[in-house]
Length: 364
Image 1 (spheres, rainbow, N blue to C red):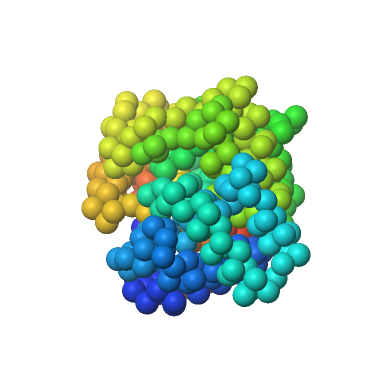
Image 2: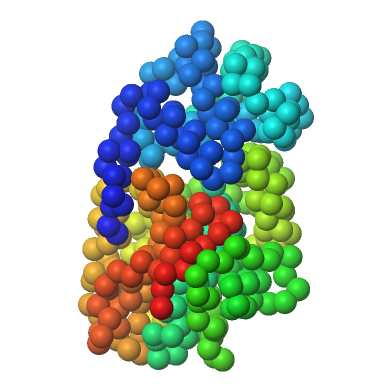
């Protein structure tokens, strides 16, 4: 995939203050000013005599791959969700907006819960957001107009808890376009800007969806589900409601997830026997930036090889919803291989809010 403009500089911000401010602005730009205040308070935590502060102080350069501020922000939210300390509720509700007051509160929480907060720095945040499925589905509808038969065999990279692996069970209203099973507890209705995406053809079908993650989250495990909710910015109540809807669907039928490296999984899925008359499509959302460069290159090479063997009867697609770090928007880019007129050219189809609040459709 093509690196977004300005990404090279933002991927490695060695100056702590600049990197922290970038992450805070990212939260503010996307409707989470309280989360931004908690992130800015990490400057005081970094200077504190705590294990958490010392680890932050010795972090080897902040990068988008690390997402360190969002790791620990999840830990602070978890304190509230578990009832360990409820003082941050006033910050998240907007009752406390003074940065100095937030700084003091976050620092006190770090001293009180140092041992509990420290492990949140061990791994990247799990931001499994169903709102992003609006763009993924729109990309799939776009592809449905360009294949001989819109019967899809899907697989997802970095599926986390499999929230978007359940895309076939969601109801979507994308402008005037409707798709999905009525009666679903998950309704994805973003503010749609621009023309509506194509209507689903009469024979449109998602035949299967399988996802991978290096450490999948089991939504049926209450502790794991609560940890996933902790990574949701608490300013956004509608996002927490979507997590609850996803949990309800997963309890009825778990998403099809495997624990696997993204490179291994993509290679395995691309080399499976391809049933004629189906389109095999990989998708992912806000995870490519976390992959090592070698894994990115491996997946790209695997697609080039598989794409060279694609035919009109067995086409291949790649749907990616990833961040433009210069604008804080997500960009939907879709590629298609069919051995004929489509040979993997990249199409920018939409810009979107990072959590799916709005989608601006650019595709024809």
